[in-house]
Structures are given as structure tokens and as C-alpha cells.
Image 1 (tube, rainbow, N blue to C red):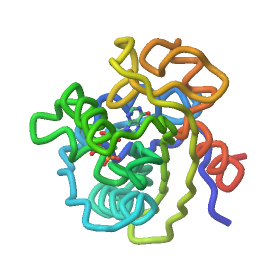
Image 2 (cartoon, rainbow, N blue to C red):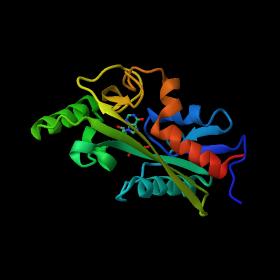
Image 3 (cartoon, rainbow, N blue to C red):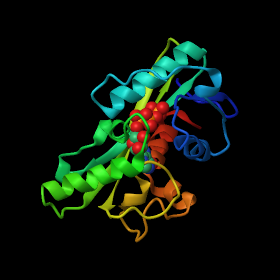
Length: 199
Ligand code: ITT
């Protein structure tokens, strides 16, 4: 049976510095987390058309190159009025400079262009674990909420300052990281992963 054994080393197959503290906190100190970047594993091209596909691709790439178990996250913001955009293109909307102030303005401008006042949105995280040249497991979690403009707060990363999760009045950019980690898309995906792979 596939299991993640406590204390083992897991390669976090991400090059996004915003995700690393969240993944480390969510793994609850039970595992030794090293990043793909620190092992000089290059970032693969995300060629799949879904969060699940890209998470599997990134985990497989890091596991095969490192020879260790790897965990990858593929995630993004989907806006109801924009038919789910930016979705899997969330990172790419920030351009090569990874400018998320620009990406958040782009979301606001698109909503203005179509004159929509529907502010519903959700984050998705697909988490994949792959064994080197072996099997892989993937799960998905979501959190729904509302967008707000202008951006508020300087915590978190990416689109956090424009997203108010259901049941809260502040954005992920304002909330304590522990609150985000208790209800985020990534936390919900990790709950499923724990049920599947952890004792
Ligand atoms: P890796 O592939 O190296 O992990 P990346 O930034 O390219 O890094 P993704 O392809 O999964 O990762 O892009 C996800 C983007 O969606 C990310 O850059 C953020 O802008 C956004 N995003 C995902 N989770 C988020 C969160 O919890 N808060 C804010 N924005 C988030």
C-alpha cells in the first residue's frame, strides 16, 4: 500500500516561494521538506490542460529527477463571470515579471469590460505525490469566495489580496496565515491527501 512515512524527506516540486511556507506548515512538521529549486531541479513546462494534469506532470518530473518522493501543487483562481479564467493560466496572467498587482488589475479590467458585478470566484489546488519512476496520487481542493477591489493586505501571495473566502470579511492578504491554512484550497486538498496516504 502507498504511504508517506513520518520523518521521510519530501521534495516540494514548486518554484513559487509563496507556496513553500504553506506546504511546509500544512505537512505539519511531520516530514522533512526540501524544495526542487534547492536540489537544482529545473521547472518543467506546464503543458497539460487541467490542474490535475499539471500537478501530476510537476510531481513526476521532480520525483524522477531527484530519485525521491515529490509533492507538487498546481493551483489558480477561477472567476465565475470570466468563465473560470484565469484558471490554469493564473501564473501566466502575471507575465514574465510575475507581477501580481498587474494580474489582479487584469481581472478587474476584464470584469469592467463585460460590465459584470458578479464577484464570485474560487481557488483550486491539485496536489500530486509521485514516487520516482513509480506510481502517483492526485487530489483536488477548492475554496469559494468573493473578489474585492482594490487589493487589500500584504500577506500570502498571488491573488490573495483580492479574495475574501466564504465566511470571512477580510481577504487572504489580510487574514492570519493560520486562518488561510485552516480553510484554503491547498489545505482542503491536503486533507484528502492525508486520508489517502498518511497514517
Ligand atoms: P510552481 O509551478 O513552481 O509551483 P507557479 O506559481 O507556476 O509555481 P502554478 O502554475 O500552480 O504555480 O500557478 C498558480 C498561480 O495561481 C500562482 O502563481 C498564484 O498566482 C495563484 N495562486 C495559487 N494558489 C494561490 C493562493 O493560495 N493564493 C493566491 N494566489 C494563488
